[in-house]
Image (cartoon, rainbow, N blue to C red; front, side):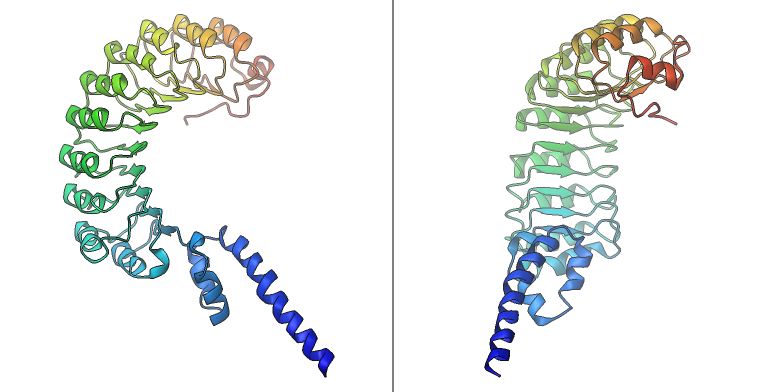
Length: 353
């Protein structure tokens, strides 16, 4: 009987020490919905999981319904008081009033928040941004893709309330103007990533302010912005640490402008899709300077020929893994087999369908 009791005590000790450690490791890798389901398994497991603050740093409501009410419910729980990441991407049922309630009822709940994703939350306006950012002093990453309600006033609230942003996604916020770029440039000189895809009201002057003041940029997405000219493109050369640059649809970019961009010799990803004024000369300049390129799209550029590929093969053959030359009618050697002979590391031959 005594031996049996010892065995039971050992099993209980093993369960508490080993199983607890395993659960702690596993739980950090589980989706939030699964993690919450585990809370219902047993009181012991509930207490175990609740005791680890590190696994309650994320609130993921991506694509969920009634997301505004769910957010308020989550923030009412003590376990989320150190939350660092909130994801509301394409969530339904979240409006300005929810964000105002967060501020009113849980003003201290987001003091540790570092990342806020409001992508596709099209009912959020400048008022919602003002409310939520006013209680997120440590915010570093802010994303509000595809929101036409946000104006320069919303960006003014953001820069006033959140002084440490390094990653900013404003893609599809078509109401923003050069004023927003001025605010960003003046407030976020340590900015590392900026996406202004389809922000069609921004002109050369707005982009120039960013390029001249945000020299730490490593990622710059200018997709589908055909209004910029070489006046701004040339100043991209002011970004010595730039690694990702998307210029898809840059109809006014010339070989001269691309020559200045080539000074960003740390570039790893360059999208020149539909940059219709570019010729061999511009691509060769890039090839000779940016020898760490891993991704290059020349899709739809009729002014390039096999000549630029020959230079690329001499400088980037060991780094390029993605090369799209579809639609480049001047390039004759563009079959998969021919490209692999020049670029043996290629794994992707088509970026655009």
